[in-house]
Length: 247
Image 1: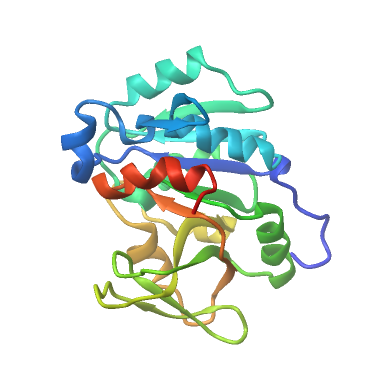
Image 2: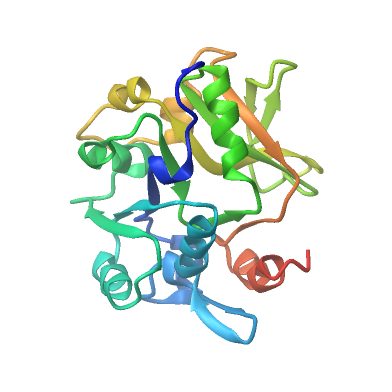
């Protein structure tokens, strides 16, 4: 892609993965979809999804595709009632749980840009997505993954990055890991890689797609900005503080 017209967030399709079952926080949320988790922020309570959409719009995003599954109608109704200025938001509902990669494959026909951006719907990271786009385009990589430095990487698998800014190794979860670099849950995936994802079966972007690529294939961009994953009751409780910029 080097030498082609510069990419911008306005020119690419952004898929938000929002179909997970949210089993770890179901005891807190009940029948509320995980992306609709209420977050008290700046004196008001809003769904996490709205905060994520506002953040994307503020960075210049224009086209968003919500990949839905569990409790999809609740999300669709909310989006229809609460439009976001500047964003065109469409929804696609998987017929059964397909995993993160399976959901992208199911939505493949709606992702027309090259690359497309994929965003985990239960994470937020304070990063410059324009910088990520520039790095992806200049490298010519088939995939770029946003990573973040965190003080406690024990909940997550870590990412080992080589001097050429590509992934040299994925490291399994280690509760004693301490500080480390982790996958922040935002990807730029080129058309050839999107087309490689098998259809009709459940699969994971991380495990079945990215970790299967040869060493040195995946470009990384690392940030030290604020990061939150609302997948556990504890982290959901921390979300207002992190999103407000206090941590």
